[in-house]
Length: 68
Image (cartoon, rainbow, N blue to C red; front, side, top):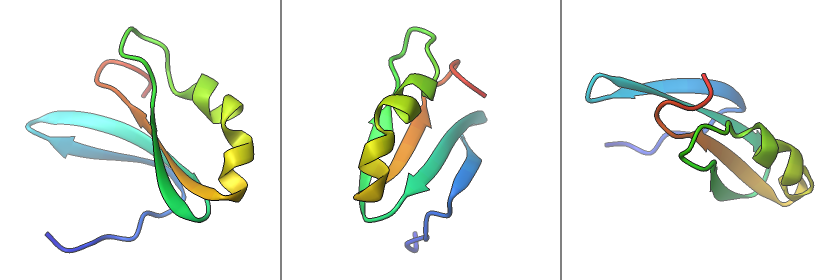
């Protein structure tokens, strides 16, 4: 699979008939932040890690059943 540029904003992808969502923000080296798997969305991470967006490109991944 070819490398893909991660564009800013909210996105979805489907794997094995399951749709996942994630949000990209910030600039710099990729930093993947996954919310907990028991129902909380990534909103708490997006608020808490906002200062890191000046130094990293954050990918906020929503586990299956969470968020959008």
